Amino acid sequence: MQAVKIAENIYWVGAIDWSMRSFHGYATSRGSTYNAYLILDDKITLIDTVKEPFKEELLARISSVIDPSSIDVIVSSHVEPDHSGSLPFMMEHCPKATIYTSFPQGLKGLTARYGMLRYEPVKAGDILKIGKHTLQFVPTPMLHWPDSMVTYCPEAKILFSNDAFGQHYATSQRFDDEVDRGVLFYEAKKYYANILMLYGMQAKKAMKALAPLDIQMIATGHGIIWRKNVQEILAAYQKWSSFELEDKAVVVFDSMWGTTESMAKTITEAFRDKGMPVSYYDIKKNEMSDIVADILTSKYLAVGSPTINNQMMPTIAGFLCYLKGLAPKNHKAFAFGSYGWGGQSIQQVDQELRIAGCEIAIPMIRVANKMTEKDEDAIRAAVQSL
Ligand code: FEO
Image (tube, rainbow, N blue to C red):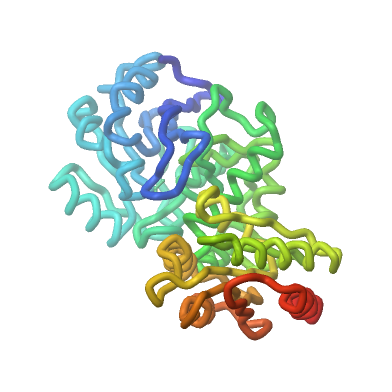
């Protein structure tokens, strides 16, 4: 296990989680990495640790450069255990290290999880001189936990961004110019949608705080390090955190006997006939985390469910619960679905879309039993009217 040099006297010493397929429910088809960084200076500094099961990998990579017991400073950017989980282990191996964490939330969270280790709380504007390098601490509260902070090193022009700008993307490569650009930006977008969409306002504030910094490299907490596309990923975060949408549509549905599926197909065709790019997601065959990545930038959203036991399908209820949690903004939506009798599901979907913060763009579309030509024409006309 070797460290990877990312700049003069600065190394990536993280861990690669090739096989992770679920990050607390977020489907991670490409695995992830837990990134930690080592800065060699008068005070040897480790920025973040890794998820606890990967602690030996972290130690081995550090040991490929220095004796871990020589570490003086550990910066803990974020209490969530994928970054802090190996702190107690590292403190056993770094007897003289002090943990720098945000005040008060980082201090509170780390103490609650790991007890009294050697902590030094830091606030906005605090600076730590570690020799030739300086570390400037920038709190980014609720991006995405109250304790979250990033660290900027002006001499190296590196932003150690922890969760911000990350991707769940395990590869043998470490930099953005070494991987497929389309895959990288898709994973960055999916990460923002699933982890940060709810905190768009805080992301906007953080972007403002970072604006004066001369950032040549973004050393993330997950996935690839940005060095070629720094301005592009900053611009993408500006767009996403401004809730800017594109003229695109997303259709999500479940179906029992094919009628709601037929409706979904007709709606999809109708959007296409309007000249609008549209995505079609059978909820049984797709991951919610991929669907919300698409929703992040799509103006229109159609959600359909047949009625079962007077309810919407549990799959669609779960999807709408997830969507409500992410609090999307500025979307125009509508509900659709089929039924044999009753038909309560369509009203329920409509209601949940309103609660999720969507504007209801057209009245809900209901079909009894089986689609007729008349139903099809009505659906096409309704979508055309959008
Ligand atoms: Fe990557 Fe919020 O932890």
